[in-house]
Image 1 (spheres, rainbow, N blue to C red):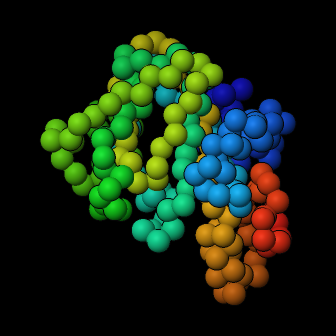
Image 2 (cartoon, rainbow, N blue to C red):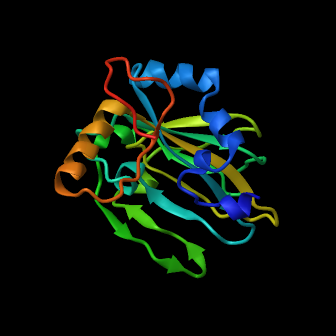
Length: 204
């Protein structure tokens, strides 16, 4: 099932277990403590890193989701579904990079069969780095500006994680209003996990 759902942007709209996950009381408590009461559950994905020589370049999620310095009221949750370790390419954080703003990125390409993706322009060798090694059922949270990546999976087994993106509803509403003012075509929206505190309406 994980392979079939890999990289799906909104699994919570397709699977009841994913919908229940984003509404888990502990996750809601964390989300509202960080973002306030108006929380939009924006996306869910399953990330599968196969066994073999695959890795992911150092990057920022702010670039991936087209967020700028003024729209960073968001964070990502990464829930381990399988064991993680440096040997199977667990995620790594570059310490204190969230204070550097949105960095320039370049296309790292596919070197020697390795999945590289967009790479941040920064000196990883001069930065303190930390492996993130949650056990299955544990999760990590990250700011959208934290530079992170994953190492080579040197095992024969895939590493599987569920990734959840939470955003402040007010910031997303501004983007939707701008889009709607320019186009009346279909809009891909998120899902509110709680009703807006200020009667702003919902998008599902």
